[in-house]
Image 1 (cartoon, rainbow, N blue to C red):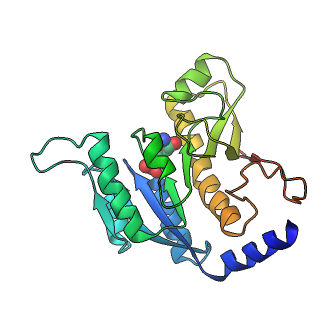
Image 2 (cartoon, protein in one colour):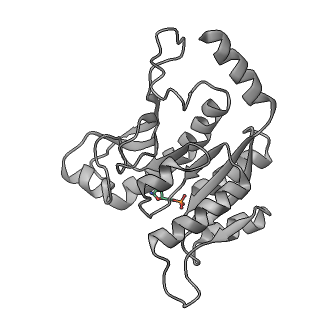
Length: 233
Ligand code: GRF
């Protein structure tokens, strides 16, 4: 109902959204969120960062911002953590942080259905392609090889099926004739840096309702998803 929606928007706007971020790499998307949070441009509090790699530069970014970090990469024997072990520790850590939203930002492990279903908050993922096209890896190379005119990135709800949850938002660009997988990756990543904070802002203000990710309730006055952002060259 619209009235309920308005109440929940007001409630959500009153205090920052508690966000936990899962990373595996450079963390440039994490940095965008840190910058926006510190500038007061995004009503979020990053309550913690989990990395499944101990060499991820994202850890340095979180440390520099005094955000709690859990590095869940190895077990006591020095071996790489299996996914079950990772999920056990990650679940406990997330429950302790009590996030409202979990963001997978360049997180490169596939999570199990039971971890996703039992997570303490809804989970969204940033994927470097226009879903449902190009799920999985090597998306830029595959889009060029297929002769696509357009490419971009998507943010979707995480479900047990890989890259298959409801698509919330997308940033689109035109593929240029001279684009390589590397140049396209760089251009898409610039799009990600706009798309991620924009999407979280829409979630924080209730414009995107993660309990109704298609915004398709009969009484809803909200636009159908995905919302699209066109990127200029
Ligand atoms: C992003 O380009 C994302 O699409 C891909 O991994 C990259 C992560 O970048 N899955 P960063 O770690 O946020 O810099």
